[in-house]
Image 1 (tube, each protein chain N blue to C red):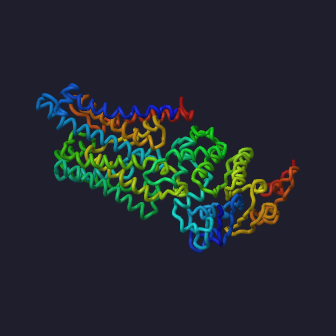
Image 2 (tube, each protein chain N blue to C red):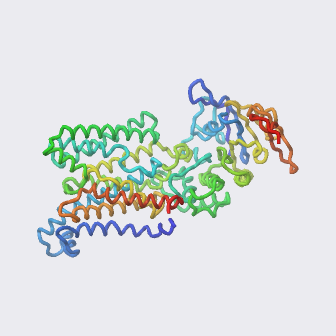
Image 3 (cartoon, chains in turn purple, cyan):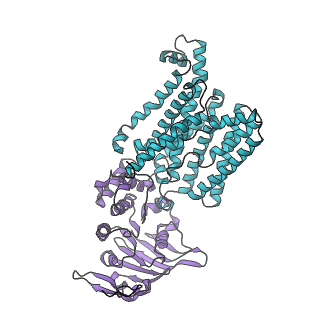
Length: 266
Length: 333
């Protein structure tokens, strides 16, 4: 599934653009990381890509079909959203939570049947969370919750999943568990747009990176080309250097030990 | 644990008929099972007194109790999910305050039972209509609707206070006070058909959309991302639920706690999935009010107002449920 955004512009209030002429292409079997400081417009961009918000100008299309021309159900069959925080009020089981992903396939009075339950099984298997099916969603860890929400998107039948800072509350091990599943699903042909505060994860898991600063795109391209010391400075207003690990990966490190604090001399 | 309890959920189907039968048999004038069946189905000989007692007094009252209990509990369960708040009950949108004002207004003019029930029903709808208008004007978010319900309730409570202030303290005021305490002693066949029809249609609606109610428990953007048109669905659920509660309050007066506690009991038994929660709430709600109404009319020489009884039972029941919740979180022994 291919997702395109062409020069989209969005403002919560007229004249106060939060997104300014953003363009993005997510091809089939590709993962795009959207990086940028807090308030740079990452989540608003995801809302526009999912159809929750309609850009004031520009065009979002999925497989060449204008997103705004699709019904809410048709949109949901193509694009899934994995929210950063999902705090259910009631203790649904994981199976019941993933089953909610079947909503766009069921009419108002319909209830899920065998086909829907089979879709849930396949989705949980695909993310390696089949063992969680009967556990309460409120009793599982943050990393497991992310996997369950990915499974819900797969049960939706969506070919493209939008993930809002999936690593935000996870330790490094669980970040890599979740993003490892994202990478595996990407290799299986699914497309992902992932907002993140971790450029290091983009080096590991992204096919392409889009850097945002104050709602504008400052660079777009493969992680090795896009994540440079200059773009990092432009995006985060602080100095970084890029180091190379012995395993061939790259990582960013702040140049100063305490960039905004008092000098520290051990 | 929930799954094993879910497997025993069918047992709930037996509870309302049993409670219904008990309500027909138990009273100041005890009736044997065979006598009740003879009176109900015209089998063999049954005295006129017995037939009249069963068919004209206890049967309409038991039907009213069952319908009202089921309505309040199902709407409580639906509204708790819809407002994503387990402390909500079926009266959150000002329906009870509107009904109380409507009944008090009719009683102020010494109107008959049918006019009191009609006025209560009409003003219950007016109250929720105002909430819906406020919601539509300001975006229909759950916060706006809850605040709208709070404001409209406060307005009708103030108007109710005004009516009580000007009511004749020897005739109208006691009638208003008694109505506000809740009770089913006024249940008669002549006023029952609207309640039966509304209950039948309302329960059918909630049974049909019960899986969709799970989706209403999600945050709005999340539900929208799943292709759910959240505002129309929420509005329809509110309107149908409100009509059911309004019809119930119009007949039974202010019966508290059923809409709050019963959904929690049902949830503890069958889990939060509305596919099971809706029928379980209906069954437990109907049985609860049938049993409480039987106690209300038999425990003391004079009838105990039902609203008092539901409060006396509801408070400790809710406290026990809350204790269970705290224990599950490891915050209480």
